[in-house]
Length: 210
Ligand SMILES: O=C(O)c1ccccc1N[C@@H]1O[C@H](COP(=O)(O)O)[C@@H](O)[C@H]1O
Image (tube, rainbow, N blue to C red):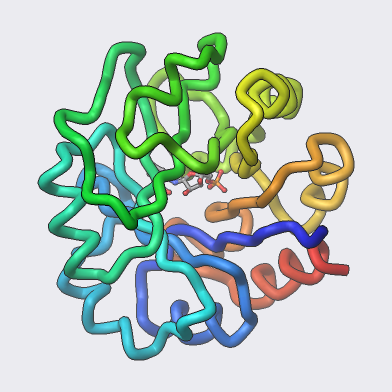
C-alpha cells in the first residue's frame, strides 16, 4: 500500500503552487501564532483556487479552543485538523463539528494510553508521531523516536503518521522500520524556515514513492 505524504509549513503562494504540482497527498498550514511558519488564515483563503481537490488541506494547531479550529476550518476549507499536545491534561473545550477529520500529535515523552483518544471529540483518526522537545513544539527538524512510533501504532491500533526530522535521505529507512500509514515533513524540505526547497520536496516524494 502506498504511503500517504504530507508536506507541511507552507508559507507562500509560490511554494504552494510548485508543491501542489508535485502531487503530495496533503499540504499543511501552521495556524499556531507563536510559530515562525505561522500563516494568516485570510491569506491561505486567497490561495484556495490554486489547490487541487485531490490534495487534502491540513490546519496545524497547538491545544486550540474549539471556536478557533472551527472558524479557521471554515475560512480555509480545511479537510483535516492536526492538533499538537504540549501538556498531559489538555482536552478540547467542546466537541468539534462533525465532518472534520482530526489527527492528534501527543507528547512523545509520555506513555500512550487509550485516554489519548478521548482528548478530542470526534476521536482522532490518525496519530502523529513527532519528535519531543521540552522547550518547543513541532517543526524542529529533530528526528523522532521510531521505537515510540511503532509502540504507539501497536498500542492504540490507529494509523500512524511519522514526522520529525524526515528528509529525502532517511525517509525510505524510516518507512522500512516503522511501516507508518503516512509521512510528514517540513524542515527537511526547506532552504530556510518557512521557505521550501522544491528540489528537496521532489526528492522526498520520489524517495517515498520510488
Ligand atoms: O512547523 C511548525 O512550525 C510547527 C509548529 C507547531 C506545531 C507543529 C509544527 N510543525 C509540525 O512538525 C512536524 C515535523 O516537522 P519537521 O519535519 O521536523 O520540521 C510536522 O508534523 C509539522 O506539521
